[in-house]
Length: 334
Image 1 (cartoon, rainbow, N blue to C red):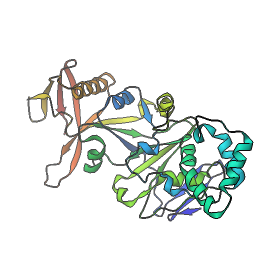
Image 2: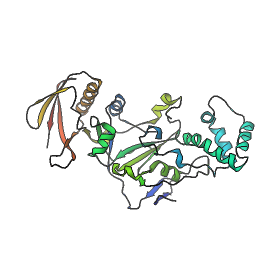
Image 3: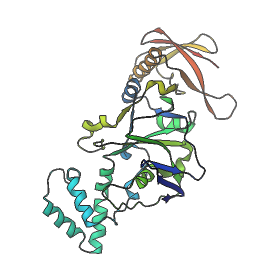
Image 4: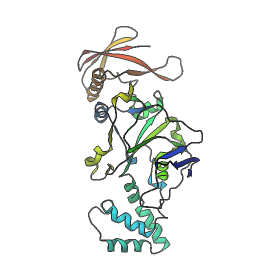
């Protein structure tokens, strides 16, 4: 099927193939940006990636329920839908089949009540989708001023993966379809058609085009839904481990060594940083540096390119421990 000028088709194994206007090829290397938080340090330490619900994303139109219109779902499908997912529809009460049939019949009574019925149950259907689907967003670029600003405030880090792949419950990566307008998706079954689902998860405003985003999609039961009472219980279902050998290198932000850190310059390319340990941010940075050193991870740092161009560029650096949890030697290898 054609949606927003791209073709979404299934191969013989049921996997969705996206044919873009410019025949965009899958990148070998992808970047994940991280802010400096306990959660992100833990994810890096334990080698897992978190697949998100749309409510966790920073674009209100990302995979949003406004793209879904239920007008072509029949009474029979609605009865099945409510029966199967009663815990989403009415958590504090269980309806009998007779009560569900009566409820749906009343909703389909006339055209006015039917449209109200569809709109009322749109969030219900949307939550069902995202109890079984979550997304992982990565980018092709590592030195974007805007991406470092959006996701790390220049104080965090980014991880560059090479040939990232997962278990069979995860598909992708898929390119984002950047457009100035989205098409409405009309589900015709209890389970949304896979081509329409992939489109819903990969269509974004062209204002985000500079992100060069690609997405992996996790399909699994019992995923966490923000603001739902079982979120904290189910959140582990959204964590997917990866092979640390798939990390090509880690990149530290431009402001990573700013703050409560005293630098001592040894030469133009080498300096010693002593952490004053006055903030939680210091602890997180120290934890990350220790992980890099202990696991012998290749590391780079973002710096300003010295050519009057407002350009960021990453350079390889070498990190040595002078005094654990306090003092580190950083050597820029330009």
